Length: 107
Image (tube, rainbow, N blue to C red; front, side):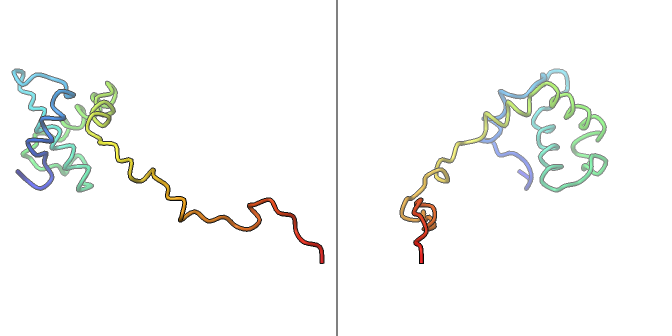
């Protein structure tokens, strides 16, 4: 497994949300790895390594998946909610004196 590619566990989670059939020569895992490589490295479509296939094919397929809502469904499926950041500890919340609604004392 290369640095920017999906592990076996990650692919098993993501695979049901991908389109296409392998029998038609569409390797969904290779395509998703190509998109992840582009996102993680910041290269342009034209600079994708040749192992991912023709850059134009990958680019057009990415656009079709985006229009079909595949990326949104895949994102919703693979994210794990992290509720730790939602918890607020009241001992750390401080308010200014003026927040209590007390009127100013007259001199």
